Length: 288
Image (cartoon, rainbow, N blue to C red; front, side, top):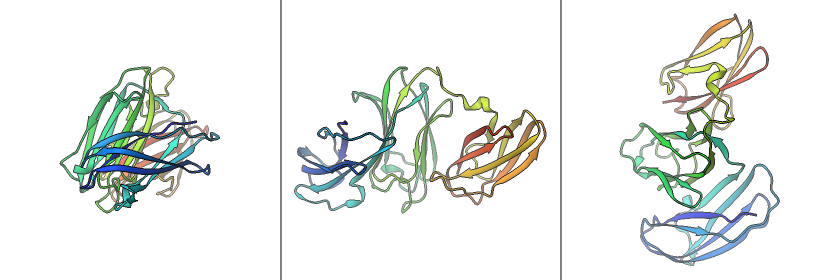
């Protein structure tokens, strides 16, 4: 069972006195709830939905959408739907990095990190510089659960009518919490913080990309413990391979591959390298 809590922001000129919401998980039956109260222009409010019973799957998709506002159909349907993947929260360290590449309307982007009891830990935005990579560093306490929220007041995420941007939230061990481009008006992600215990350090896998972010050329550096064949693939955020597979024999020792990213669209990519012993190394690549 789950008791969803969502945050509603009024981007219209009229106060909100009632909102009819519908929600479901996967193919389970849809539930309806009508909230009444008052939300003024550009004000926000958390709304707790009634408990929902379902058979868990991993992952399960929760879909919530607004059916009516003030007893009328919503005039702006672009930002009235929220989808959320219900998976076990990722365990990360206490030092987090949030990178946001703004689109042409940076003033629409805001974010926050809160504890599970809704206490504010960190926040940012709205921003003023368009098409700019913004890097935020956040420190959270260990042994706590948190929720990250990213909002777009325009309801179209960081793509595509206002240019192409992206965001990625990851810890100092390079563990990704959430990242993306298209998310409508809001994206949510929960995570659990821990002081590095039991967390895989990707840097020990000897795969580095320099510079990262890259705009022209990126050097993929890796170490070969023995001579053998290495297979390299690059995927976008949708899991689509965007480069030809490189399969080559490398000698033992430190190696470097140069990658021209000038023709790649701005965004986040995943470099996958299959080593001779079939061990798979992965690293994030950000193209500006």
